[in-house]
Structure formats: C-alpha cells, structure tokens
Length: 388
Image (cartoon, rainbow, N blue to C red; front, side, top):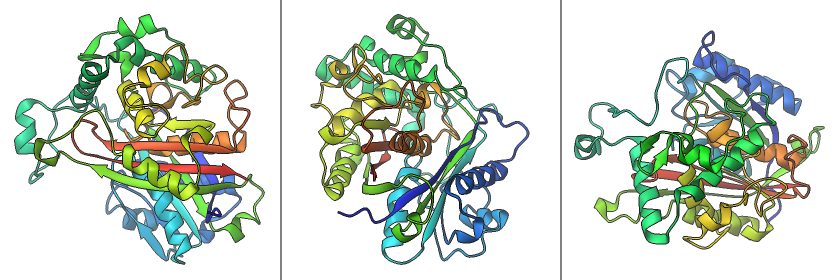
C-alpha cells in the first residue's frame, strides 16, 4: 500500500537520571525536541497519544500541561512498553480516518531517580487486580516470568545461556558508539554467563538497565510531510496483538509478535527477508530470541543459532539490531522500551545512526515491542518503516 502517513519528528531525551525534573517536564521536553526535529510548532499538533506513564489524568493532564489547545483526537491505549509502537499504528489510522493531521506521541518516566529496582521484587499493582490473588503467592516478578520462558525455550529447543549472551554482546558492541548509553562497555559471552544469577537461567547481564528519560514521535499526513525538510520515513505497515494466560493453557515459547508481525508485513506487502534493520524490544535477552522467531526472521527454536557469533551485530551479522545499544545497554525510560525502538528505527531509516553502526541499505526497517511479561500477559506492536 502507499504510505498513508510519515514519521516526521523523533527525539530521545538524553537524560538517564532525572533527579531535577518531573515526569510531566520530561514529557514536555521530549515533545519540544520532536517538534524541533520536525520543524513544526505546538499549534500544528491536533492529535495526542500517551500511555500509563503520563502523570495525573494521563492525556487530559498532559494536554493541559503542554498547552496543546488544538487537539481533535487523543488516545491513551495502555499496553506497557509496547504502547508507543501500537500508538504509531493508531496515529496512522486516525490520520487516514480524518481525526487528526499531525499526531504527537510521548513517553517519559523517572524510575531510576525514584530508586526502583524493577523486575526483581514482588509488587502488587493495587486492590482489585484480577490476576494477583492467583499469582502473588508464588512470588511472581518480571524477571522470574521471563526466566520461565527462557527455561522452557532451552528445554524445547536446546537454546543455551551462551546463545542468549550473544544478544547482550551485540547490544554492547553497538552501545560503545552511543555517548548517552548507560552501559557503553563491550562485553563478552563469558562476561554475561559469569555475571550473577538473577532468575535462573537469566544472569544480571541478561537484563535491561533501569533509566529515566523518555522520547517522542510526530506523525503527519503525506501532504504535510511533503512540505518539511526531514527525510521522508513512511509508516508502511503496522500491527498489534495480545497474548494472555488462557486459564493456564499457555505455550511459553511464543509471543504476541507471532500475530502482530504478520499483520504489519501483510499491510506493507513485504517479507521478513526484505528488512535491513530491526529494533527488537530487549527487556531481557530471551525477549529478543522469542521475537526474532515470531517475526519470521528464523524458524521457531532456531534464534539461538541465528544470534550466535555476531548474528545481530551491524556490519557482521545477518540482521543488525538495536544499534543504539537498546534496553540492554542504552536506556529503558520509564521501564517502557517501545518508544526508543521506533526512534532508533527512524534514525536508521534516515541514515542518521552512528556511522559505525549505520546499515548501508536502509530502505525498509522494522520496530517491534512487547509490553507486560512474556510469561503471563502482554501485548506486542510491530511497525515497518520505508525510506522514500
């Protein structure tokens, strides 16, 4: 299909620990950065998209705080870290249907400044949450749920800890070129498997960083994008899907990307083999393994072989991924990594990634994210971008 909308602005906040900023201020600074990148002003925005990280009454509070007075449409779809990739698709659909012309998507948070140790502590989400009486007695955490998936993948397919470690090696190889990366040091497979065990079989270096910060995207209809000076990055395909516990009858070896991916590829009219770069949500190394298979980049059970020996390293591997260092090494703002996945995909599509990691053929790129937990309930969003 003809690209129905374009990403015309993208901005990643450089802050990794925001002790002197509020969450609302981070949202606003990200929005301003994306507007500057696009060459637009706040008065041009008539659509706004945010998720559960937005403070107060979410979209209502942020519209007031940022002085966005011309909004005709807003969307607060909440799907954890995948929300912002899903928002890209929703924004395109809103533009197609005439609900808005220029859409702004923001993400921001301060978990690091607030001292959060995400993923390793048992926490209640509040009174009345339907799943918690059944799961909290077993000390469910984000880390242990992903560890369950890793252990099952190893049992089913023979995946090894060393193969998982190659995901971290690739991310760290790219992060060394990012001046804002929290973990810019290149690591080895041995470094990963010898790091402390967090939740068997996941080690400390199999886990993402905890960071403050945020990001923003601006999506515009084609007629507006054509008037701007930025490279044209079209949203060619998008999809969203959700996976739940199914009353216990759950297969831990696949994610909702097995549904969202085909939707995006179908709309775009392209195949996985056409993609030159992929941003893959990397909350844990096992997250990448599962999504690579579900998106069709390799057969189910073969991602361990696909990533080992540098399969994801730019200039070396078959599919360069997360060339900013990703959530494993760069940042994971508000514990929600979908936004930064799209931002780095935009950089690659524009040819604006660091020269050491920029892929030479960047006409088709992909971003995929999950929100929630692979081992319980989660949602996935997939977008395919085309450089015109």
